[in-house]
Length: 150
Image (cartoon, rainbow, N blue to C red; front, side):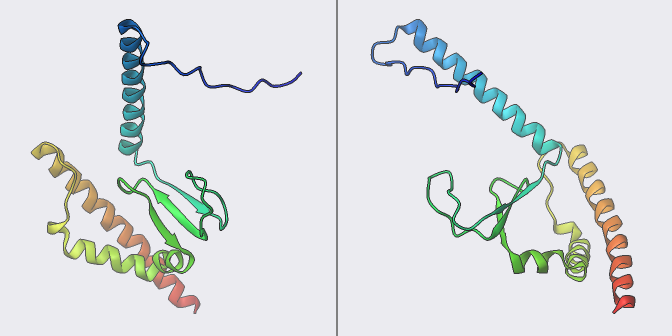
């Protein structure tokens, strides 16, 4: 049995479409946009985070060959963050991570949180500080253990 390829629906001639057809298209697009927005919002709330390696010479979405050789990280903000090999090593070095966490805790009062009600922002700040302190404890132990093995 041969698998059938999904084909795109035939394009609609918008110049000759009836008002009912145009309204149906608009409604369909609105529902698709709402579904995509809900999916993106749920992923953001869940702390969705992903990383992928961009291989040299692969085609990007525009059909262009990429320089590649990097890692794209999504889920940190609106745009992906691109890191190259040496940057990944530097960023993930436990001593460097500990320094970032320590610096963040030292200037914690100046860190921003996402907008919300006063109570939501205060709760987010408490959770963020607790998370940073827990990570600092873990990385402190890791750095000490690594120093003992050297």
